Length: 178
Image (cartoon, rainbow, N blue to C red):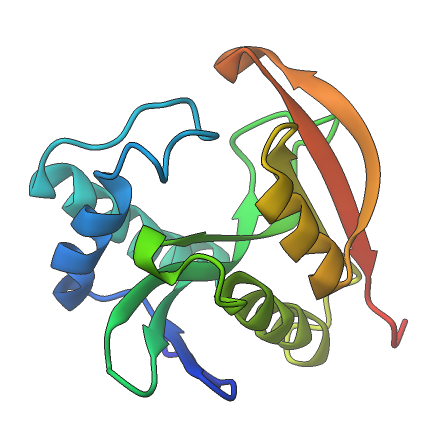
């Protein structure tokens, strides 16, 4: 599956094996994992497992997260985009499309989560014709909360997620064309 979505400053494309070093930089940073259960990865083999999982999602579900590249530099920024969740019961939902992002710390505060998230939502609604998207963020992650609101999602409620023993916020956006 090939994706090539461009925004003003970013390129969103399918995740590839060549993203290994960038993904390791991203997911080995404890600051990135502060609101994700505090379990950063320790090896590049773990990063490769993530890439392999996303590539499998493309094959099985027709969608998965996108690699985010900064157009001006060609640098790996992180990932953003869509995923069909079928693994977890989140706030009473077991099968739903979610929108999310995870960026290397050097790229925080530049609006890249919002920019890539808006592009992913547009793709979801205009290309995939999805009816709605959901998202979650840790209750204390104010930056992610703000980005989701700027993308256009609406905060609905807080809920406790037992597998991670944390309270999360739940968001939704409907396809404006349906």
